[in-house]
Image (tube, rainbow, N blue to C red; front, side, top):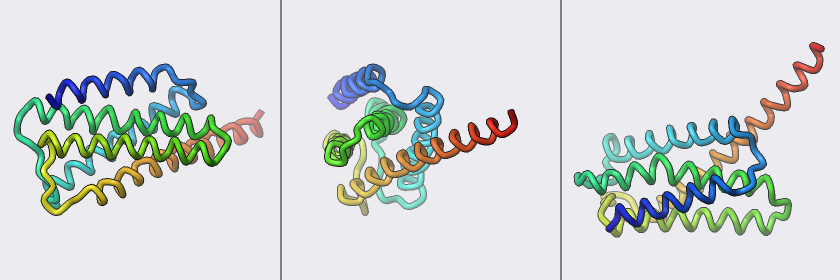
Length: 161
């Protein structure tokens, strides 16, 4: 039951991410996507193998759910949040988008726990909330850093002309 729900949510998120109006370029979104994917892979690996804070299920179908969550859902939610963050000018609407994305990421953690994909040993959903907030803040930081680099690159090349 976990795999069909996760695949449906993945397709829904892909659809939303594909059709929203994007303020950022394809390269900008791709860089953020790749960095968040690398960070989420390393996070899951460290927490399961090194720190043993949670245990991942051994069944292949449940492991596929974890891979979909780790490699597609989390980075695409960050991409959606970043693109909406730069489109919306009012802080109240930005906070609402931020909270909706955080809520959806928490819902995915609850589903992973409910279906037995992840078994928390020395972990709980409050720690997962902190990690999800950190994912979004890292994505926003990377995005702002890419804006600074692109503006600096343009100014440097303009001086050479």
